[in-house]
Length: 357
Image (cartoon, rainbow, N blue to C red; front, side, top):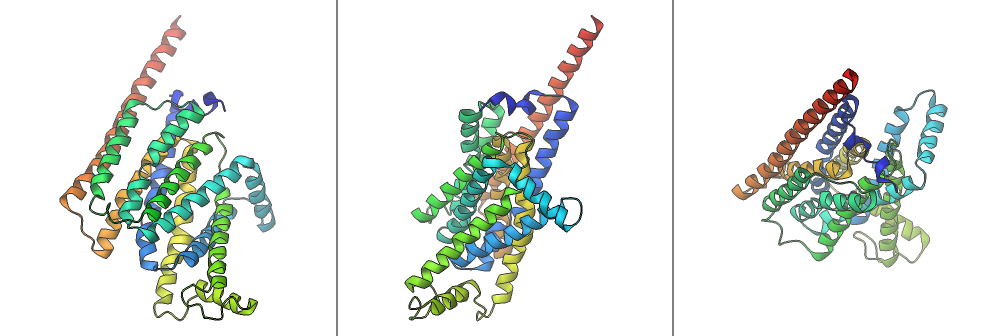
């Protein structure tokens, strides 16, 4: 891999390059805000592991597919053909992106099932460090000192923000969250190896793979006869096994089934597809570590959502941690803006001097 082809935005300080970087920040930040209620809605839905993974994958796949089709031109047949062409254009890199995004989805969803949200968020917050290291090792991208400083301060702030919850999680949940963080960082870094190529069409494939994982989990529970609501005769025949799978996936006997299904539809069919489509486009305009740094906002707002809706109040230490994260992001943005202004001024002066000669 040639780092020079991927770091052109960081060296090009023309007005067009600055506009592209600003677009990357706007797209990523908006995407993060859309997915920030993720942990809250997963709690409100209160669905078992297998069905949750299945519906999360299937509904997000439908949402991603609709977004992909609506952004194409022409009639239905032309839109479908164009969408397939865009997916094929992603090549093998796109397949790896889909697999990594599937891994991050599985890790996040299941980690929230086995440990408290604070544990997941603090481990997920390490993704900027992983992304910066991966970009340094694979792409040769050098991160400015203030970016590293912002990452470290943000991690310290999130540590304070969730410290009250950090000791209550299971090892399984923490490992799943670590896998999510690594997959997310790898996904952003891999996208940087194909500059200018939009990998968001592959999110549809990722949703289908996630749904397949959930379906396999429900099938295994049906065959083994240990799934909730599975009768004693499950696994004795194909009909019983199929009925067991359907019962797990569609527990309509539940009193609050409609409300829980509504939370899943809102999260998986609307917020997640829109949010992650925007986030997936971030690496087109920004280094992967900066995209992952903006993802830290999900941790802050995610906990604030839970506090606001479920009345899980923060301590003074938690508020201090949130202020550290937002303060680090603000200071970093101001430094970036100042540096770009100085570099643009120097470039203009150099061009003027060259023109005078």
